[in-house]
Length: 318
Image (cartoon, rainbow, N blue to C red; front, side, top):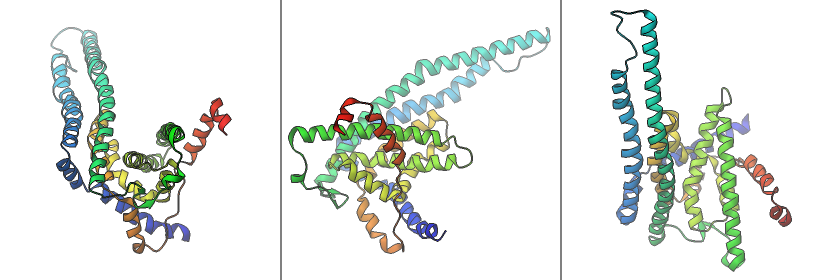
């Protein structure tokens, strides 16, 4: 109990620090002012995911469905005829309304969702690249650092084909790791009582990792370093990711996706401008104890290793 109490203060301090770092959206204005391409990409994200996607949802709920209810009402005027005829008419109207709405989803929303997801993913990478170019040009961080943390020296890293192979291997491992972690987070959300709270915490961590991963990839931070840094300072990243995932818990899945698709690139920009280790080091005097590391990706790592062991190449290398 005493150990838990000693961890509460540093966890709370770092969580709030991460939250406020994510909320520094004025950095978005600074980045956009420094890069015309960045401004265009942000505007495109707002246009596609805000005006078109969310606008379509609003049109469906405020125009299409009320119009269908007017044409095919839920209640039928019983001025004459048998009750069974009125009941049959209402059933037919309900079936037609549902069918027309489903057609709207199948031929518009679902294709638009897939199109938006693919195009937004491309834009997010472009946004991160141009933002980090701005960061690099302004010398806000060093290319050898993980937010000021010394990385492996260049001469100790493999060169040529070995370096390329290592980079590809890390990317494959990272994609598989995060995919398994996403499934893990989704499953935990169905656990009674505390599932939603755990789901919120883990989703916050996951989206924070996504936001900072662009930066770590750009500055060639090894996967081992980034995972170690992330798990050692989990409270900071949980706070950073919290504003990003809030819409998921207040709106329907499609609506929450639209809001998330708008907010996510903004938090990618705030992550690009955040020197996390300097912030964390600066907060050490504010709390008495050191935050204990939590192996956030423990299960995902084990399962990823098991999956990779299914391939002969992975077995041979081990």
